[in-house]
Structures are given as structure tokens and as C-alpha cells.
Amino acid sequence: MGRVGILTDGTAQFAEIEFPGLELVHVIPVEIRSSLLPEDRNTSVNKRFVTRRQHYPSKEDFLDRLFQLSTEYEAILVITLSKSLEPAVKNAQQAISLYGGRADIRLIDSQTTAIGLGLLVQKAAAAAAGGATLAEIDQKMRSAIHSIYSMFCIPELHYLLKIGHIGFSQAIIGEMLGLLPIFVLEEGNLTPLGKVRTHRHILEYFQEFIEEFTTPDHIALLKPASMNHFRLKQLYQYIDDVFPEVPFSIHVSNAHLAALLGPQCMGLVVMENTI
Image (cartoon, rainbow, N blue to C red; front, side):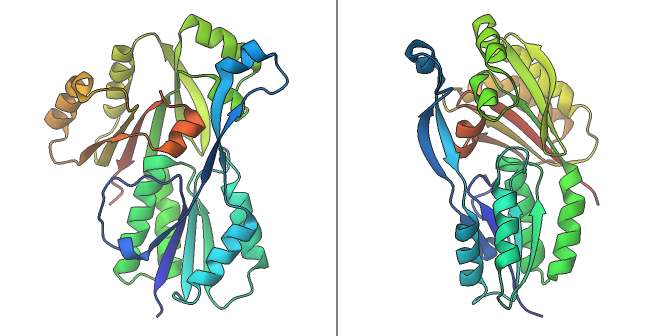
């Protein structure tokens, strides 16, 4: 039985610096570039829509990496961010179809990104380090996908415009009104859940979301770099009181999530214990 390697994309954000199987995990980078959206509008409007676009690995990038890894592993599991957010899955799928090497390769659409993707990769890596076969890890991951629950508050609506979730007028009006829309990530798709007006209400929304779980395995909060931890004290205290044994981590959103959903985006990710 050969070793199983794990390949993921650069949007993954890990809950821990070190974890079992870390040496088996390989990350294919995602490039970030500044851009103006929408390009066909006048200059005064464009100034409001300066964003950072992500350039995901092409099929050639994936193919090159697969050939590299096949010299080290007999089997490779590729786990990417949700195909509804960006085309990494499609590019990886095309690369696998062109691959003619000796390694056994399987592809999984994580239906999530950032910490959600990172938690899945960590689980896959732990299984691989424990000697599980590619088929066993693949089955575990497809089951684990349904135990990841994500909620996001996305104040900068022009980022939703960029990925095609809302129209130009909706982005302009929503930002003028100062709305803080809440979304859940369901089967890889951002689904609107509600709107709030203050950050305090966002955290209350997050707490209500956590209350729906009975056996969480990990709870992670994604916050903007500008938000200090003191504002999160009440939520932290609630989790500590209700789930004292459950790991709770707070992370600054990585550059990829900031480029995808905006630097002011906040997120809550819960992995349910399925054992």
C-alpha cells in the first residue's frame, strides 16, 4: 500500500499550524491581482470598486503538480474550493483527464473554502498519515463535507457582484444603505439568510447559528484584520460556557478569502462531530 498525498489550492486556511499528516499536504498557489469592477462604468464609480481578483491554477498548473507528486506518491487526493465560487475544480478535473502517469488520483469539490477547506484537508491528512487508502480517505471526505457549516457576513457587496451573485444596482444600493448581509454556504453556494445593521448583531446571529449544534468538533471564527479580539469576548464566553471541550479558534481572514468576499468579511465555520 503506497502513501497518499493531499493536494489542495491556496485558498485553504488551516485551523492549526501543525497537525497530523502535515508533511503529506501540498498547496498549489493562487495568485492575487488588483482590478477595477465593473470596467465599463465611468471612472468615479470604478473608484468604489477596486478589488483584488484571484487567478486560480490552470489545468497546466495542476497537471505539472500532479506529475511532480506522482514521483513521491502512489495515490493523490485533490481537494479544492467550491466550484460555485471559482473554477479550481474545473481546471483540476481537466488536468486529471489529461494525466497519464502511474498515480491513482481522485478529485473532491469541498463545497467550501478558507477554514472549511482547511479543516477537510486536515482530516484527510490525518487519515492518510494513519495509513488509510485513497478509497477510504475519499469516502471519509465525501461524508465529512456534509459536516462543515459556514456562515458569512459580506458588507462589501461589490465582491458579490464580482462573482456574479448580485447585480450592479443591488451592490450600489446595498452599500449606500450600509446593510450587512448574512449568507450561509449550502452545497457550495452562497445563500442569503438575512441582513443586520451592526457588528453586534452579526455576532448575535453567529451565536444563534452555533446554538443549532449539539456535538461540534471544531468552531472557527474568521474576522477582518481591523477587528480587535475584545469585540468577540461575548461570543467567546458563550462558546466556552456551552462547549468547553470543543476547540475554538479565531483567525484573520486570509488574503484569498479577503479577495473573494472582501477584506471586511466575517465568517463562522462549524465542523460537526459525525462519529
